[in-house]
Image 1 (spheres, rainbow, N blue to C red):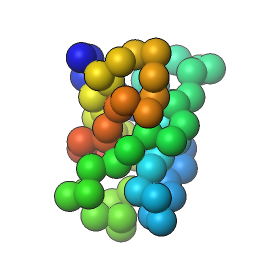
Image 2: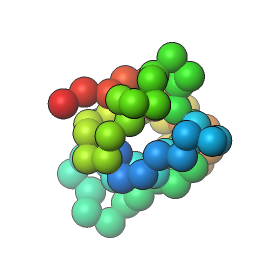
Image 3: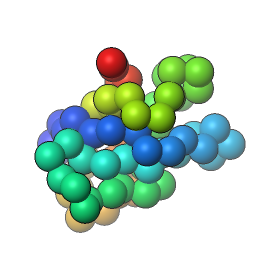
Image 4: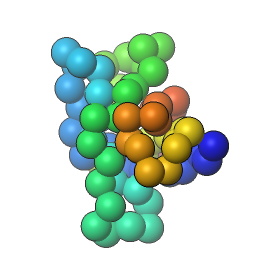
Length: 70
């Protein structure tokens, strides 16, 4: 399990999933990452920093966004 910083690239409020770019990586995007339901959709502004827990670094579906920050 790893805690990583990322930049929010897109957010789907219907499925509550996000596309993220890991901080320090210009090519690695994670698509379909689950967003914790306690985070308001209004806070999921493109370009904001997010904290994401990766339970399995090789499977983006096994990750969750746990915080949003500026």
